[in-house]
Length: 114
Length: 117
Image (tube, rainbow over all chains, first blue to last red; front, side, top):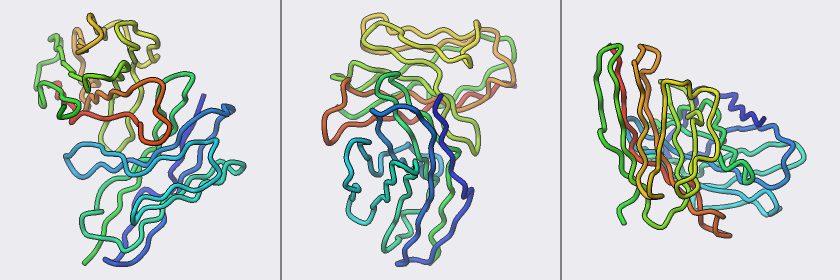
């Protein structure tokens, strides 16, 4: 079974600064995807960024980038130039390609302060 | 296509009543997933379908829970004899399978918030 751990229940950052959210996971699978999702208060969960496990290059998406360390089973999210609209709960998720389901961490609540 | 939709968005029921939720996935997606999310927690997997076939059910899905996807399009999740512990957000997601190489993911609906009194 896969487990996903997000060790930071809450974090805050000043507007325009950079913040890193941590995520570690445990699996014996080789073929999987990792995702960061954003869930604003009372709003829908949306994809922030994805990483295929077989790709060594870290994914980037505008202000969002990941540090994927496959051997260490670590998948952190860096948000640059933080904006007030980034305030949300962020979930790290592991998608098991063979089993067809995602395992989520318990989330990190990020607050961007003006 | 406007994305994954769920109905109703909110449901309040009394303990012991039956409730049914509906999920309409993105039309071209062959996989459909149900998750449950309680306050302050990440979503927990309940079950998923490949077309109309239910391929896996979590141990969280007790005998009071049943899910269907009769024509491989929309899905329903029914909870019989609801209990207060069933109060949660029920999320539906859909995806294509296999994932496309660079862009695909699970797309989530807005969820149905269930409150059992």
